[in-house]
Length: 354
Image (cartoon, rainbow, N blue to C red; front, side, top):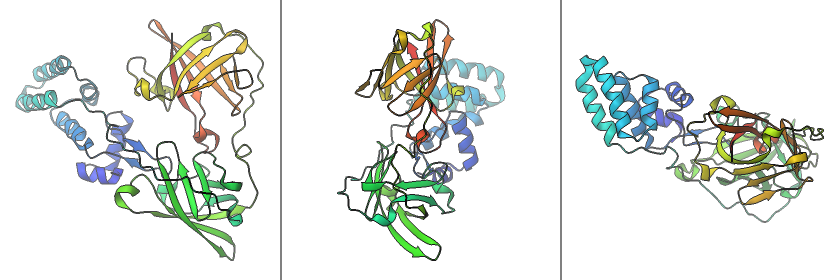
């Protein structure tokens, strides 16, 4: 369900949902980079019902967040006992709410997300007129994420994939590794240039069967390569020693901003993290594990104090080390296709030292 539909089902405003998302209490199960849509599951109405009941009973947002995140009945009972003594006038409502909270199983908000994958492996058929750089001119805010912050799409020669985009004659192809769609396009020559209309599919297409019309205008017909349209960073930094970083680090969490870092409870389950491990050696050598792939060798990547230099995609990923209690954590920039081609800010991986 899109955020507007979910808000209507819950009987609250979209702005309230966005606030709960910012507080980490009721987050979308999926945010589609392709369209910018936020999606919620129908089962999350039960999560909102819990939040609403707890608010009516007088709990603060901080208390509600603790209750939602724990499945420990003793912890929940202790919080309710303190609230009962402080709010005697609502003791009856608190008792009913306590029974409801304690009997509801903790739920994972992303369990209901089911990727939608269409076949995007079409034999390539050329359409010379579409090769080049296009800008998205549709005013629909739902398309602001398409093409990245610059709202530009490149149709590379021979249908070469870049970021999550490719094409063949009459088809605009999208595959982000989770969702995959093949959307039809048509072109039209106007007085001021060549235009394209894409019948754009997105996450909810499999349920609704509806597409959105997105209009593009051709900017040039240059035969770009994916390397020249990606961000290029200086990776020729001199080696500087950092003995704190030496050793093996294993993945702990994935965050959008450094401010989200918590040494207590990671947001992501470890087995779902793609960047799994990195090990730093003396004199600038390092080895990384991405999924089932091992990246090693000085021709692929090295490090210097404060940076991992990924030569294979020309990115210098800054890192910092934080000490929390008895553990050292490594926070390192994750400069994915969203960063290199989409113009988005970097995300971050968090590792803990073995």
